[in-house]
Image (tube, rainbow, N blue to C red):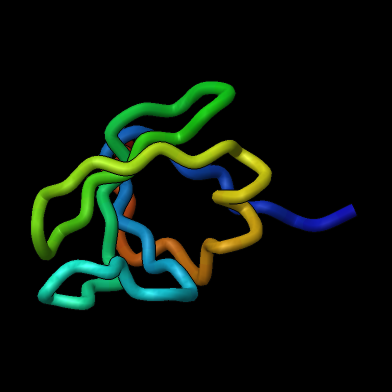
Length: 70
């Protein structure tokens, strides 16, 4: 079984391949989490939707997490 990091709403993630926009950014912000994951490109602000399996396969690392610890 593959160990998948626990990604949450608002996290910034780096993907294996860049977004095909003019900025070629690999950084995305997680906008929606569920059966599908909605990501917003930090270069051009375009929103893309991936299945969880495809997201887990293309994820390189979690750059920043917005989890607040009390």
